[in-house]
Length: 183
Length: 426
Picture 1: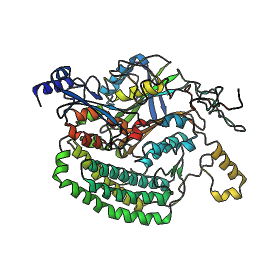
Picture 2: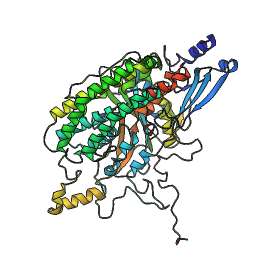
Picture 3: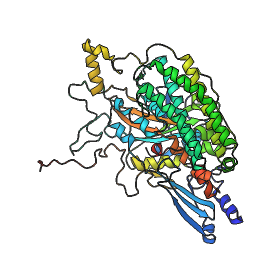
Picture 4: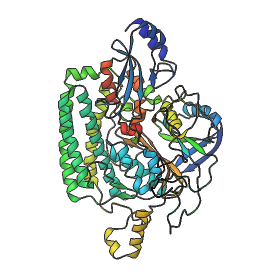
C-alpha cells in the first residue's frame, strides 16, 4: 500500500518492517486528519521529536565537565570507529507521530516531519486529543515550537527552566568541574 | 447538580466530537465555567505532590463547588530524572539497567521493550527458551504490578487488609525473581540476544507451586471486595470513560479494555511466545472504576494461565544467541581462548555496535502500550531513546474521568488509572 495520497506527501520508507511517511511540516494537520479519517489510524500512540545536530559528526553528544568537551560518540582509542558514516538527515529535528489502528486490522504507521530550529509545528490536538501532553513534552524537552496548542507550557520541568535538555547541545554534566590547581 | 452546573458541563463538552466528555479546548484540563465562578463559591484545593494515594508525586489542582469537582488539572514532573538523556550517554549494554527503573512496578516489561528494540535493530535471532522465559517473567511481573495496584487501590478505599494479602503474594513473586536473577526488582535478566544466564533448575518447581496456589488467592481477593457494599458503591458508575473517548485520549491496557474496546498488543501484534499460548482478553463495557478493577482481576487469572503454559511448554536449548559480536562469551572460555577474551574485553569496555536506523517497538505492559522509540547512528550508544509511557497517557484522562465527579471519588478514580509516577515523569 502506498501513501502518496496523504496530503503533503514527501516520501515513503520501509525499514525494519516499519513504514515511515514523511510529510511537509506545514501540512501535518491535514495529513493527520487524512490518516485518521481515511486510513483508519484512530489512535496516536506516540509523538516524539529527535535532534540530529552533529549526526555523523563529532563533539555533540554532550560532555562531562569541560567546555571543550569529551565526545561520547567518538570511538575509544584503538577502536575501529563507526564502520561507515550514517546517512545524512534532511534537517536538524524530526518529529515522529506513531499512529495505531485500533480495531480488527491492527497496523502501525509513522508520520514524520523535518524542521530546523525555531520552525513551528502545527498542533494535532484537534485531531487526537492525546497529543496535548506529548506536544508539551516536545516543547519542554526538545524546544519544538508548537503552533496552535491550547495550553502550551512546560510539563516536566519548572516553568523558569532554561534550555531544552534533550537537545544535543545541552550540557550533560551541569556545571563544569574546576580543579584547585587550575587557574 | 444545579441547572447552572449542567449547562456549564454541556458547554464544556461536545466540541471534540458529538457526545464526547473530553473537556475543551484543553483535553487534559477541566476548566471552571466563568458563569459558575461568578455565581458559585469555588474553592481551589491542592492535592499533592505528596499524597499517599498516588503511588508517587502527582499534584492535582482541584476546584470544588461544594463537594462537586468543577475544575481539575494534573501537574506532573516532580519525579523527572532524565532517563532518556542519560541513556544517550551510555552504551546499550549499560542502558538496559536504566529501562526497568523507569516504571519500577512493571520493571520486567520495561526491560523487555528496550531489549526488543535493540534486537530489532540488530536483527539477532533469540533462542526459543529465552523467548518463553521472557514471556513467563513478564507475566509474573504483570501479576506483581496488578497486586501492587489492588493492594494500594483497595487500601485507599479503606480495605486495609487487602494490602497485606496482596503484598504477601507480591513478595512470593519477588522471591521468584530473586531465585532466577539474583535480584528482587530491576533484574537486568534480559540481554540483547536472550537471557543473562541459564534458569536455575529449582525455579520451575517453585514457580509451579506459586502458579498452583495463585488462582485460589485471586478468587479470595475478589470475594472479599465483590461482596463488600462499601467497595461496590465507591467504584460502580464513577470515573466514566467511553470507548470513543478512551481511543481519542490514546488510552491503552486495562483502562481501554474496561471501556469496552477489545484491544491487547499481545493478541494484535504477538511478540515473544504470546502467539503460542492460549489466553483470553477480559473486556468490560461500562468504563467505570469497578470495570477497571474487574479487568485487572481477570488479567491476573489469565497471567497465571500463561505462566502455567510457559512452565509446561518451556523448550530446552540455549538461553542466549551465539553471536560473539553482541553476546558475552561463556565464562569458562576466557581461560583458554584468546578470541573469547578479546570479545569479552571489547563488549564490556566499548559495547556492541547497533546498525543505523529508527524503530518503534511496543509491548503490552501491565499499564498498557509501553513503547520504545530507538534511533541508532551505528555506534555503541543510542542516538535517541524515547519511552512511550502508558502511565503518562493514562493521566491525560484525569480531566475526562473526573468530569462532574465528587471530590470523595477523586482518589478512587485517579487510582483506577494506575499511573506510576516514575514512568510518567521519566
